[in-house]
Image 1 (spheres, rainbow, N blue to C red):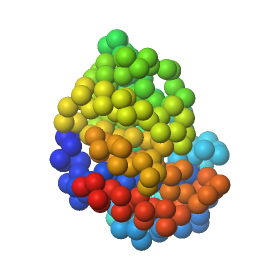
Image 2: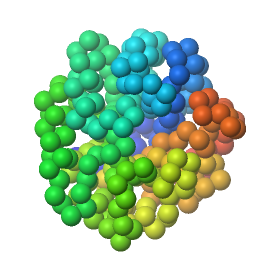
Image 3: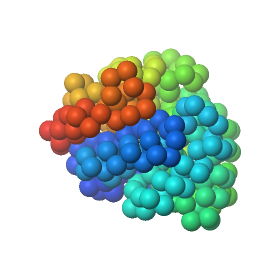
Image 4: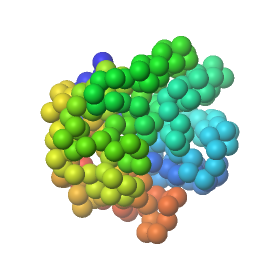
Length: 244
């Protein structure tokens, strides 16, 4: 199982690893945003399809991989669990398009430990031929609500099923309750923890127990869902380096 030190070593980041989330519209705009990520000195990002079906994202992924062969590139197929994503990623791998990580908003974790769905997702992953990193959404925004007093249970049951336990605030752009993050950290010990909403340069220091910030709204141009603002990204990087 991946631990926190190994995760940080992978990205050569002693402080929180920053993985910008690019909301994809087309190939050219995606590549321009990736250039902004790389120009900021970061190693990777996630691409997500908010405006169309996952099938339309596939050629954009292939084009991005061809143009940026060394990029650490993760993907989120919106509202698709690992069971639906892993076979697609395995097929892409066999066709020469490496996807380094999959982020599922819903890893189908049950805080009571009845994790039949999560176990099935693991079987699909093992059979898919894809060997990337799995970021599994747990007590995640827009999914089934988990009571606050069960956050630790959800995180503990999630840990065996994924590489990076991933949670969020209650909605896109909303800060996570620090008490929630504390519960997750206490439950998962030395495993990597990612936060996928509400991070900004102003609040980054609040989340010292988080290993990875998956961020879009907090680094995008104002009132722009799609394009990274280099100055806001640089400000977040500065804060995270000061945390290390």
